[in-house]
Length: 591
Image 1 (cartoon, helix red, strand yellow):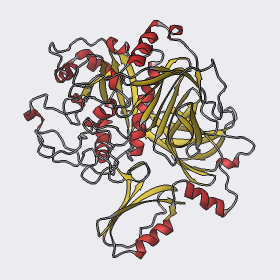
Image 2: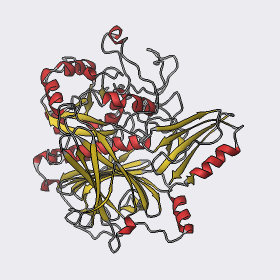
Image 3: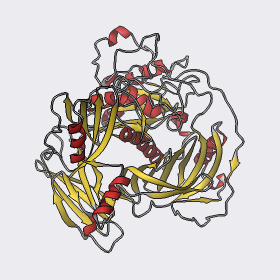
């Protein structure tokens, strides 16, 4: 629940004046165009008027977003150029889900600079968000691949804060299960339904573009999950509903209770098989950006309300209120009323005066939930063992994902760049309910294709995970890989694909240099050496997979990491805690 009064402030609106369809230099992905609002339909005109006159808007323009560069894959970098904002900034991918040029999500971080970037394509809709502190640049979809580009501050003045109140009888909540902050959990898909009200639609593009914009919001949350070593993945579906059961006094906490008890809302949620539901509205609650009622993991209370103006950057109310439904808390306070929960899941303020997403109102936010091990901008701590929102989400995520079980088999494809010319590709599966098609066990067939439509498919492996060298395909800039997952129980089959490119390393020196540029990786043998040579200095260590799963833990006993051959080839993270209280995090590769 967000509170405090909003202070209105005004900037002069600057229109970027460019020649129509100017030639893009160094980057064909973004080019400014000279459009007038009158060229769009009335619904979009209303949205344009709202965004360009909003008090947070510094500058605006119109732009065309083209195709992402051909060579993008799990480890490729590319140069981002935005006229007047970003020049030749190298982007390193963090998450890339690619089906084709009309269906992808991409997120990446700035190399040797502070900032990040997400882009999506959904049919003819494209959207993008860039954070280059202290500013954001948001590209909102309008029609076809045309966007409204808005520049705004990452530290808006006078925004409401956030507080969780006891909107219901607190005694009724005493028996709610409390989840700890462990790190060894399943990787689940969590499905969220956004119910958009008619009044909220007035501040959004037309309905043809809304699914693409929602996909952008979702990718930003998934980026925060990846940054925070959270293995779960968010999927969002959209529906439209004229909710009218608002309280007479404009109290958002009462409206959340009314939402939970609304029979039609619950029917829509059950039909969509949504684990969590948010009502997106424009009630102008004055002191609130959103509210979920209580920080509990409960399928009957997994609902909330979000004001449409504050869903995404720079407020991230969607990501923030979502965290509360995993039992994640605000930053710890002293002497609060009510007092802090006796828990480990609190937000974090960094040493550079920035805030993780669950902070009650501090800005600018970073795309992190607090975590013991994850670092912001490669080196800045984002939490500790008692301020660990990510640990809470990892622990309670499997329960949240089961609020409304899915009736279809869901498959995602993840990948890690191991070394020169080699990838570790793995499937990410959520099983359907019993009684629905797509039941385990499964077979996995991997294929490659140059055309992308797989009319020329060649099988390259079987099993849920494979190591793959794309350099085996010569004479092309890139090609495609897909995995087909089939139920042996009922024959149901589904597949997912992505684009991939060869990075050839001709010799051992180049091999080592590339490993260094990909994050200063060390080998398992080198890590064993560090542990073996300092047994009296080391208190404990923990090893995690890149998706956040704890692989191994050691506490004072053995001096060497145990036999690792049973684990898949790939990149792992080792966190070492020394006796003097200091700690060290190292990335190492196992091959």
